[in-house]
Length: 547
Image 1: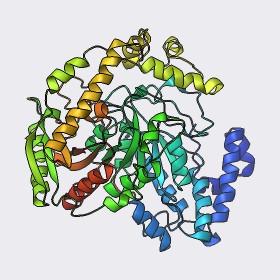
Image 2: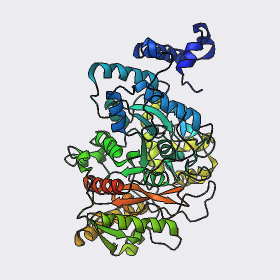
Image 3: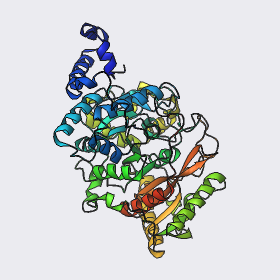
Image 4: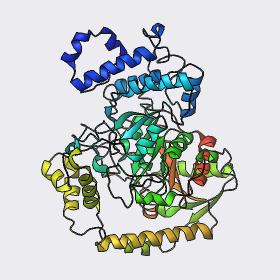
């Protein structure tokens, strides 16, 4: 049941009606929300909160703009959240039916009212104060169902937040909604799951996909259902959807951000990261998310690697003097879309115009030979998932992949992948294929560093995808995913930024900056400079401002 409560509904409702209409838990939330709203909103504003549709509009709003509007009195936190909830109500399951949202946090307005009280007392004291976040449904959210897109986990309501979710809340952010995803994050091509009927649609063209697996977050942020979003990326899943939705997506260096409390796909490659409409907003999230977590041993390597301020890299002339290599091995194939390639060549020209030196081409030595090392199969999904589920005890309705398969509570499209994973008998430590993959990653890291060092490169660049978003249901035309190899296999960071639109200005495409481990400050500088020089992003026409 949707437990979002509009203030107008509360005004019309007789108190005696509440027990008849809602569960006990919902009643408690309704009463708490009613009290919070009455406390937070002056009597003169209870008929209509001027900040809910006043001088400030949430469409394309940045974190800085939200905070500025709160300071000048044209926006309250409650009003901000109301605007996003109104947009979700109008566009997610109705109208264009983007279908990006799995559930809305029923406590979002009450949290916003509490933040308004704090603001009245202290002003803005936290970096993400009152910033509504769209959270991918594989992140644990305390008190909010977390399913990784699967009906088999429908009964899982975590007692604790994922580590990075907790950090965002501590920084003042509001978990506004959970977003749809490719079930268990399997598919890079489409966003469909068993927890939510139907596909998540691309709001730039409702007949097309959002890529996967973080397509729900991407569609929601692009359509202004929230201020910013969280995704996960194993092979593609932050960068691909961001490119298809004209967003900025950061896949951080492995170990910079924690994965604890996130349903795993392959822990050897899983990372958590931001998905936003601007580079500056992605940087604001990354600053809060980054850092060591005792529950995720990979993050020990981040100690001493995090700058005091990633925002210091938001330099408009950051491309000036940079040496950037064009990595054809990431994208050059006969099936590449000609319009995407035209945009990419224009992006290179734009970088040159900003003072960058483009080195074209560059290549990783012996890549074909290296790829042969990783030919043997390595599928750690069962072992990573079973460890995660077993640690949750009675919180989860299933405790192993075998139980998930026997439950039949999953989308038919993933059945083969589930059974293939269950059939694996060797642990990742024992597997010959996994040992080969580890060797491949070590050697690829060295080869990429040798390439960059020998050419004195600050970054490598390529189109995030070489083809436009497919039509929903089409798994046959060329896909064009350029994300699976370099960043996931090396653990090095990558940032995708909008580079324009194909098909008469309707379908977004992205350009990707890829660099050495812990080089986020340098990549941010390049990405921000390119973004500010080109300003390609515009919102989708299917989800316009509400009247």
